[in-house]
Image (tube, rainbow, N blue to C red):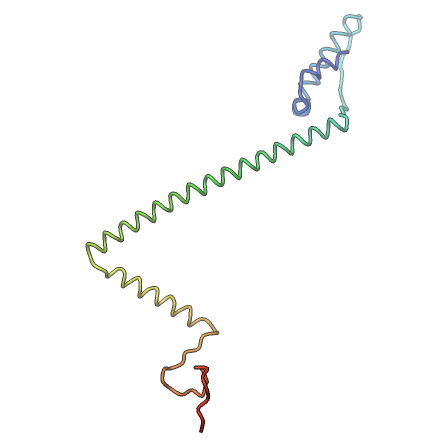
Length: 154
């Protein structure tokens, strides 16, 4: 009679997380009830508290649902941060393009020529490092049928 009303005040999660408080309230209720019958109790210990299988499954399902909700919240926050990063990056690129445009108007096309040279240098470095690239001089007979045409008749 004493335990049911006390336990009914809490939800399943609270019974697990506030076990000491629940135990204290049950102890106080049992001592008060025993006093009505002139029984003096020194100490009461609740050592083993179990739940039914359905109840335990419901608690586990609730915890899984909460974890899923937290995971979805994290995904949404991550997407929002990525969106903000994209906006900031785009604004930076727009500002850079504006500055380049102004520099071209003011100083001419020297910047474009420098970038063209840098790009050509990067391409040449990549081709030089590749083992699949072979340089053939133009207009010299290398005894290769590179053109894919007919062999000259002798």
